Structure formats: structure tokens, C-alpha cells
Image (cartoon, rainbow, N blue to C red; front, side, top):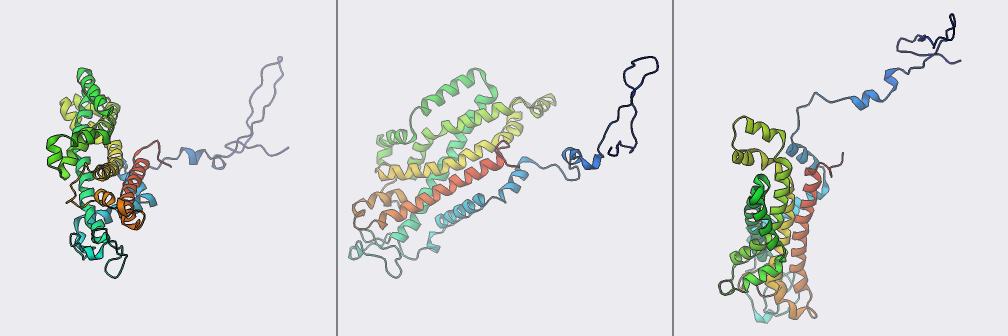
Length: 335
């Protein structure tokens, strides 16, 4: 018989049920040494390090994701191009010469010329500013309006939640592009086309999604223990909302906002392509794509290059949103 082990390496004698006046039975137990079991590794808790916040842990995870690194570098490049286009193009985009109409690429003009004799590369570089400006300021406006309405509706509830929720449903029923087309057809917007009219039109129908996300996040955090403790210490309801509930509800809002920014850039290009967005005097990718329609068969590059810049920019923001979602969502985070 194999050797019997107990924590003291000695057999353990346990009396069996009494069968008679003098009858006993010895039951032998085999107990494995504790160091040979995985319980120590399973139950071990690391107590030496300081507690890590959600944002610190998210940043630690983001630094290891190639998706986040690639998207961030692309977005930084787009931002620098929009802020300093003269660093990347030495040719004036408005200096057009009909003698160069539809000419192919040559030295100093790597992407050729448009039908009006304008440099395609210079227009693509300088058009970055208008498209990115519309996307950024539309996102800011949507965050302010939608975030405020969603936070108030989710935190206070009751009749305020009912009114704001129904108002959001009304605007959410209309598609973003269709609503923006309707607004841009109003006399004032039609006669005063600019970056800001496009921003206003997109904000007017783009805030319901952010409002819904904010409302859900606030409802999830409004009854948390730290909010109850802050109220018990004398903090007002509104102060608790601003200081505790909203900061702990930012994760899903940031993810949706980063993805929505790319959506708004596409919306501006769509409106400009239809002739309802930015005026033709403003260089943007949507205007360049619209102006390149007559050359699609003979010179498709005039359309493909601004379309490629638009696609890469939008893809970068979508990739950034996916990376942020994986890092900030505890359910999606891989451990």
C-alpha cells in the first residue's frame, strides 16, 4: 500500500460507527501537501501595488494595442495637416490655370490637375481643415447639448426624463442627413452657407444618440454608494451629479463621441457633394469629390484622392473608438 500523507505526515485515525461494544474501524485519509495544490496561486492577491484607477488601467491597456497606436498617429497627422497645410503643400490651391486642365502628374504636382487646372494634391491638403473643423465642432456641440439633456434626464428622472426622452425620440426619428438637408434648405442657411451653418444643421439632428448614451450611463451610476455617501455628507444633488456621477459616466460617452466625429465628417462631405453643404469657395473633400464627377471616366484619380483622404480619416476615428471601447469597457476588456 502506498504511503499515507496528512498535513503532519502521520495517519489520521477516525473512529467508525459503533458496530458493537468493542468493534472499531480505522479510516485512512490521504491529504496532499498544500504546496502541491493550485489553491495558493488561485487565492493569492497582489497587495504590494497601489490601487489603479479606471483611466490609469485603460491607458496601460491602450499603450499595448496596435490599433490605438496606428489610429492615434493617423489622427495626429490629419490634425497637423489641417493646422499647418502650408508645411505639406507649396502650391497655392487657388492658383488654377486652364492650360493645365486635366493634366497628369508631373514634378511638383504629384497627383495631377483638376478640370479647372487646379493642383489636386494642394486642394486635398488644404481641404483637410474645413472637413475636420466641421467634424470637431459638431462633436463639441453634440456633446454639450446631448450630454446635458441626457445627464439631467437620467439623474432627475420623473417628468423631466419623460419630456426630454420624448423630445429626443422626435429628433431621433429623422435621419441625420435628411434633417441636415431640410435645415440647409431654409432661406437663411441657403443664402449664408459656411462651416458654421453646416455645424448647426448637423448638431440639430446629431445630439439624440449622445443623449441616450449619457442618460443610460448616468442612470447606472446615480445610485452608486459613492453618490449616496456624498449626499450624506451634505453635497447637493446637482453637485453630486457634476462632481461624481458625470466623471464616472464619461467612458461610454467618449467612445461614442470619437466614432461620431468620423460620422460627422462623412455627413459634411455628403452635404457638400449634394451642393447643400459648404460653398464652392471653401475647399473641402466633399466639394472636391463633387467637382470631380465629370472626370471620373477619363481621370478617376481626381475623385479617388480626396475620397481616400476622407476614408482614411474616418477609419482612423472609428479605429480609435474601437480601441477606447475595449480599454474602457470592463466587460469587453481581455484579461
